[in-house]
Length: 274
Ligand SMILES: NC(=O)c1ccc[n+]([C@@H]2O[C@H](COP(=O)([O-])OP(=O)(O)OC[C@H]3O[C@@H](n4cnc5c(N)ncnc54)[C@H](OP(=O)(O)O)[C@@H]3O)[C@@H](O)[C@H]2O)c1
Image (cartoon, rainbow, N blue to C red; front, side):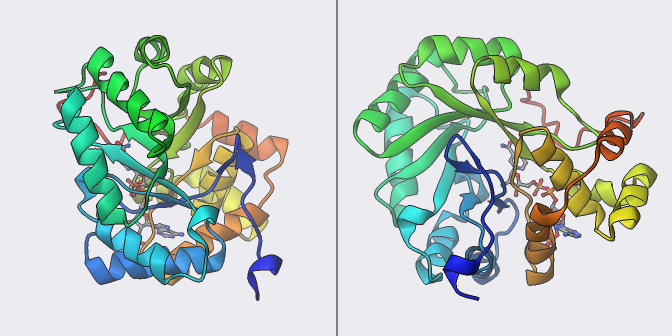
């Protein structure tokens, strides 16, 4: 299949709504191979972070794939120890060097924690935008009131808030809050780190459509207008998740998922704002 025949993810304000997550894909060769495989399969959105320790491998995967750099939506995140003004500037340059790119499409504040200082942090993010090293500003793990503070502080628009979201953590309030402010939601841990395979309601819908629970979760997120970045290492998982683009849930499916009576947050470090 050549690139022109390949399926493409729908776009949310220019951002492909299905991307590849890379957290804990820290074996250099495995990470580069996963990125290359995903891009060759049709993915055009790759998510990494300073804290994942794999920006060089992600860059190598992009370099190896038969895809032009400008066709890839590349996102990284500034870690919570690097959010003081000077450190944002210096460590983002390090990220660009490791990734082997002149600019990233999206640069997130990874968490509103530790050295995060809305004034200095966003002054540096704005300067990076002005310098052409960052196309858009993102935030991650921000609560509604913190989203508003970020919008207030940054000159550039806040493009996206990346938070945990899946059928066991539906984020209804935050989703509405962000939608009202034109801030895209990006769902991390969209497979609830594997928990989606253990939810009878999802298994029932998966069987009905001859799909996997992973595909059901990803199709539900798309239905909600939310971008998802499942992490997958094997080609089988990368392709299984990609095929979620072919799955259309019906209203009954969505209602059944919206009614699941179980909440399960996977990511809850001591420095979380909640
Ligand atoms: N901003 C933040 O603070 C934050 C926090 C957490 C995550 N993230 C981002 O979000 C990405 C995704 O979240 P996550 O890694 O926590 O969890 P996830 O994507 O919900 O789940 C990943 C797990 O599911 C497995 N998997 C993937 N596709 C599968 C499939 N089709 N069938 C069966 N198993 C499958 C993976 O296995 P294999 O690896 O073996 O394929 C891996 O063990 C991260 O990689 C990272 O980029 C951001």
